[in-house]
Image (cartoon, rainbow, N blue to C red):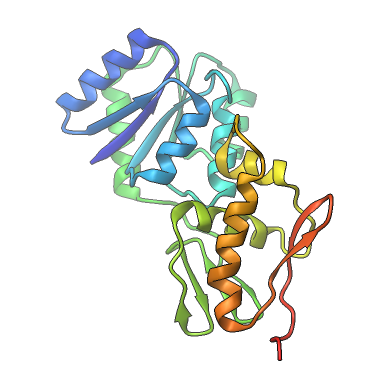
Length: 226
């Protein structure tokens, strides 16, 4: 079983890393919220332990971004914050369980194993636009009956556009929801949109992702090109 621990306290992170490895988990770790999004997109985790008070992007935002990007790995929120409203906020953003510090290590491991047994939560239904089908449950894309292979990042961009189909979505919104945070050129979004067009549109003589000049992109199927 592979687990990602996101914790900003180096001492606690090291204790969790050693303890969970002793329990048989393969453990990756980070103390940065934006890095969590990158790792979850790059790796297949069984569960994520996510501290709320992370630098760069807090755990609540990280969890919300994961769900918006169709990343459904179980999440256990770990935080020093207490109270029913804090717990409700964590669960409302998409977390599957919630533990406050200080906590029982034995109970924490039991909760993690329970989440692993439960598996990933029920995903939203696939979105269809014309004959384009984007399925978050399998992270697969089809044009009619033909599968369209996408990278994890390409799929995340397409899923976000599809989940807001008909709306204009800015480059900044795409960066925030797919990358979490990004210090480089926002035009990296253009690179991924161009790649998506080459895969889901051009071979099928379709026009699905539209550029709205000065505003962003809109996903909306048009009739097949002649």
